[in-house]
Length: 70
Image 1 (cartoon, rainbow, N blue to C red):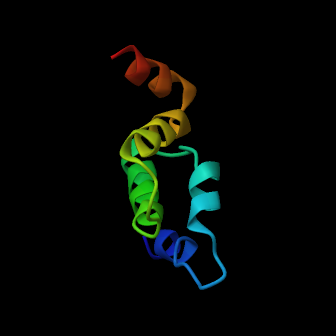
Image 2 (image 1 turned 90 degrees about the vertical axis):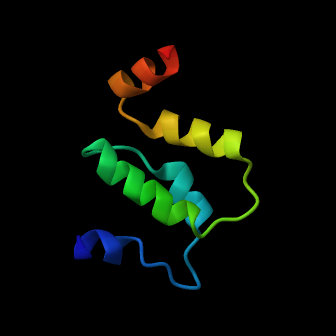
Image 3 (image 1 turned 180 degrees about the vertical axis):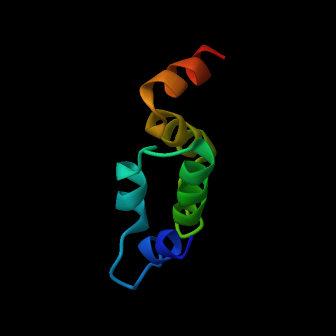
């Protein structure tokens, strides 16, 4: 868990918006969700529908298509 926190410990030079756009699920969904929430906590001004779409599109293709079907 510390490695994950260190990965997303933002400095004044980091751009959480770019990191959010590049974020994709590589492990369990709860890990991806935690990474996504960490980044979005450092971003203001993005509309909720955009954040939802960004989250869903970052999921693995199989999970993404299942979520979109719902």
